[in-house]
Image (cartoon, rainbow, N blue to C red; front, side, top):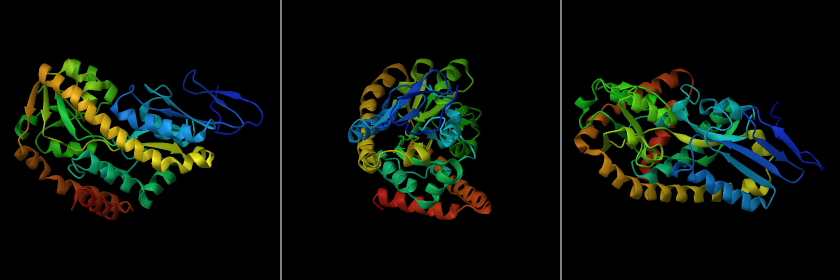
Length: 345
């Protein structure tokens, strides 16, 4: 069976079989449906899309449905860009670090120690950058998609079975973090090893990795990594994945105008909801971590030592992409300006 292109069927309802299993979507003359693909189950990270679903469906008044398919039900997370591009499903979650080389300009947001630590400021920076014309063009020209939902993350800490308190403790440690952030750790002898969020539990349990970088605290709790760990850091506060939700442009253009007009307000509600969800997760998970693990409080001087080499990594990133004809210097300067603005100068 095959997945048809998004379309209206006048006067009848048609069930279209998905290429990725048995999920079927009904289309009719007066209703359009987006299928949205995301890994994992409901958690603080998915609060944003859940709020957007609620808000847009309310405005659609029966003309629009956003079906959230958890657990990669529509296909592997690492194929989300390709599947959204060809409308195998209309929309989905992406995190740039999962797709090396596929979002070269947007990867600026994964440069180490670039984004603010404060979650409110980070959300503001990401929304500004995702509306920048060069980023909009990268999404549309390369992937036939557009940004529609925020999915910002708290700063990253490390949980696992190696105690990390200083940069010396990183030598030889297999640490999970995304590519550009990994460079900051490699300077001190860490061995970056990329595994996906859903692979983390088994990877720690089997010793494939020693320490897992994740947004603190919700992600460690959601994926139960504390069950197979001994230590967790507080104070490294590294940058991590740049995540967002995208939708196929053709599907977007065929969505009711009232729904499209309602998106900015829905995004603002999603931002507020995610920030609240992360705060609630901290209240739940941090006491549990303190009970079950050794919490290693990292001295600010250690973080400063890690961050000291970030400028060189930024320069290497800029030189590479400028040399390949992308406006890297321009976009990095824009991000820095937005960070300064969001952080109060």
